[in-house]
Structures are given as structure tokens and as C-alpha cells.
Image 1 (cartoon, rainbow, N blue to C red):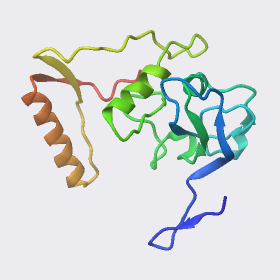
Image 2: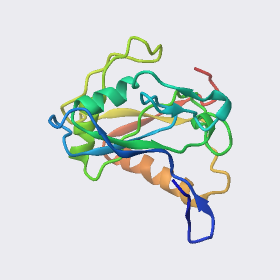
Image 3: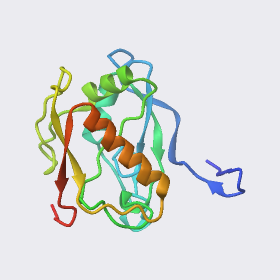
Image 4: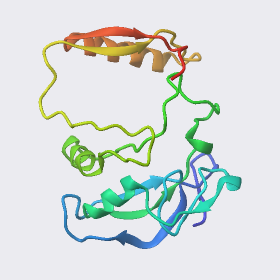
Length: 187
């Protein structure tokens, strides 16, 4: 697919692989009619997975578990999208918490996002980081705790710093208690 041009005359290539027609394995299910894309670090049978690193490229024989679950639920796959190499971000490092990359859900409504989460979540015995979790169906209790990294660095981005502070304030107003998390600790 040819790159498009941004308003700043920069080439933009969102798609790594784009299916000629959406891949659909089930026309029925809770996600029937929804379309999705996956980052190029998730396997789709028959398509190369590169994680934006040509030396890493391999062609998957099977779909990643989350891709298969979405297809089984009736969603159709449009293709694979570009990402920073190995999903490490623009500065080439993982987050301070050393998080492992996972599926992200972007949806037009909370209800759609919840339906996608319900269809895609689950334990994967082949993934050493997978955990058996249940989806909470009730609102948070009147009080809860939430993590805040002990060392915050916004690299001069005052808007991001203000948005973070506002988010913390909103969580406190909802009954939350901030808990400092050692951001230098490696998982």
C-alpha cells in the first residue's frame, strides 16, 4: 500500500500488511460487524510478523490467541499496523515498569470496548506472562488504591504533567488513594 502524505509533507505508512478483503471466520457472534487491526508484533496466520525489525521477520502458521478469539467472536481483520521497533516507543526503551506488550482496545464507546475485552480476554497457557483474571462486573467500592510511579519524568512536556496531575486528582476525588510504586524496580 503506498504511503500517504501528512499535512507536514511527511510520509505516513500506517499499514504493514493490509488484507485485500477483511479476514472473517464467523459471520455471527458478539463482535459480528466489527473490524479490527493488530500491531505487527502479533501473529496472523500467513502474514509476516516483523515487529518493525526485518531481521526478526517470520511468517506465522497460526493466529495469535487474541486474534483467533476476535475472529471467533465474529470480528473481521483488516490487517496489521506499523509500530515502533519491538513496540519499545520512540526512545527505544520499555516503560519503567518493564511491561510486556499486550493488546490495546480502541473503540467508539465503552460498551463496544467492554464487548471486545470480554471476547478477547482469557488465559493463554503458551504465554509465560498470561494470567487467569476475571472481569469485574461491579463498580469500584467507595475507596480504592491506585499506583503512581515514584519518579515522574515528563521531559519538559508541561501539558502531559498537568494532565497526569489532573488524573490523579480525579481518582482521589472518586475515593482513590495514591500508592507510590518504585519506578526503579525491575519486574
